Length: 168
Image (tube, rainbow, N blue to C red):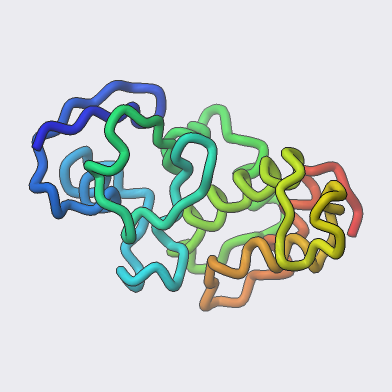
């Protein structure tokens, strides 16, 4: 099938088997290898990308389902010369150790802060009609789909709070 996607601001026309996951389209067809294939079952979050402003596990969705949509991967957030603020914060707060989960963690962290700013509630939100409050519990709940086997969780939360301009 022909699939048109905008990846990191560039239009791509691909011809894919309809069973190709978005993750495999990114990694195998476009050679964007920042997003990692961890569990391949949507349990670890290493493959997290941002599609139309929402974070998703790229291993759980088919590329054809995103026809015409905009996808942002870790490669699209920043460059080595001009890092995204979240990338800088992960460096400053040592929010990575082995680095395998880091691309998914960063994409998820960026989208989490956007969710909170947009007022989207989470399971921690006591009042779903009120704006969610930026708290340690709120960030940890929203990031719970991203596993770090090295255990850099507190550093990741510190990096997110730094970008949000908050002290937790």
